[in-house]
Image (cartoon, rainbow, N blue to C red; front, top):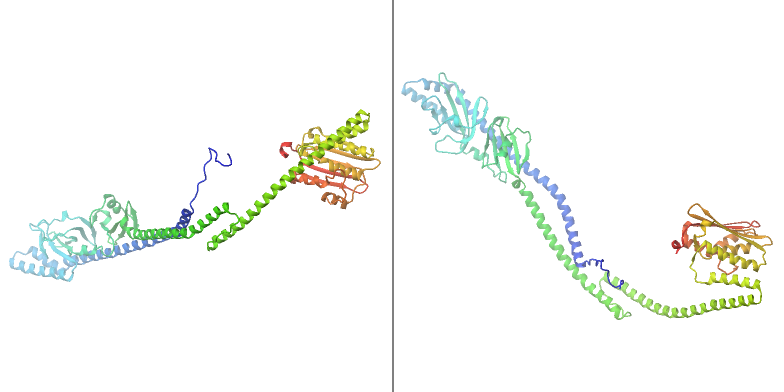
Length: 581
């Protein structure tokens, strides 16, 4: 059956589990605020931590650059002592020109003492040497033993500053060391010889300057020479694209490049120091914070699931009891429900108890109604016997009148049979205007015979409105009212049905009788008139039927004054029988 089985093309509605929904809602309630707070906090924390890390790197970078600037200044100051101090320069010039071995030894001792003195008073200076490139032995004086392959041309040029050339970072020229150092070469003005003073930073200076303990993370440094001419990676190796990008002129202190962060310091001396950090290292503190938040979210998720399980257990037992009560209802409708002692469920069960009582009452009402229905069926059969008997009797009278030549009686009975057939028959409640006019003609003819033709009757209807649909008995109460109020020696009742545009119909029932006062009109419209005429259908029937089938689309009005007659006007939309039925 269509009512008990689903059709082939239909699909069963998806059943949702209360337990799953409950846990899902708890998880959403627990995680949604955490996610929102996490997103907002992440954007804020990311900005704060990024700024903090960048500030720390910039501060460390500036400190390192400051120490390098001091190292270059110390080299500059010391080299000027060796190259511009008159006493040392004179002794060097004399040494180069002296031929006596004894005197030359004295000058050598004096020069060596002065070199040692400067080195002692300047702990940031390492190897110091006077070099004469054109001599067979280019190293004339040195504070430490120098390599035999000492060659300026092999040193990486770094910058030219304050009249001196600077090199590095490069391995020290000290014969027993290989630490990276910075060095300086300054020309010494002596006559007839090319002489230079060569100084290196101490062997541990760069290691102390680029110590990474202060950063708290692993990074690498690039030392870029004057005008970007040389790029030196201090620790390890870097991709070529990074070193090339770092060597390009830039005024930005911080920039991101293909997985790296570059922090730049430009020295007034003309060189640049760049700290290079991998993005993964730079964001490690942020990743740690995200991991902690993820652990917190996981803990919250597990706790919400656990809490959902507890709530489900607390809800499941009352639900089972409620389901049990519903099943018991089919067996025993009158049995009272058992409460769960949970306020919300007891509220539902109390309502369920009320529903059971109401169902009991409805079942009893249905039983009573079924009994009354049987009685009504019998009464209906009896009520159908009376009209049938009346029709048979009138037909007998009609044939007797015809057999005895009583034409007036025959005509009267024929009209009465038609009126009764229309009023008491099994016609639909919806008829056409043509059918309604035919019925009202028969009714009016009976009334004229009854009142000995004291009034005239006239019906006019446009041809194209006769097929329109109206409720049955629409005209009879109006005509009945006109006869009652308009009957006189020269009485006249007129019915005019005309078309109003393409979609509306105007029905007017007029008489020239005594008319009515406003109070009588109001009583007639309200149905409170004390006297009933004709078949007793009543004028309010017209108003009720019009409102039922046409609603606010119809207009019903009465225009009447004492001694001036009455006109009832009805304006309705044009519809077919199918529309109204």
